[in-house]
Image (tube, rainbow, N blue to C red):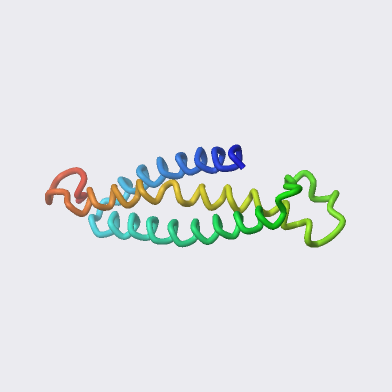
Length: 121
């Protein structure tokens, strides 16, 4: 499970960098705040649901966790849970990593002085 979480976190760091870059593409102050609030709330909600679902599936299929390359070797529909579990955990971690970055940057942008580069146009 450690490799799955580390890879998801690495992807999440890349997503956090993208959020920071896209934030400064928007010139209007309200647009920046809306983007960061939406990123925070949607990332938190979706990431939590995916992570908890993935952990549940992982616990259900603990004796044998499969990879996507093992898709055609499955013999029963319930074995697909063993394939989906790592993907859901990775996606959940991927979505949860940018949440503190977006939340912190949102607080900075919201409290910035009017007319500063952080405030926007």
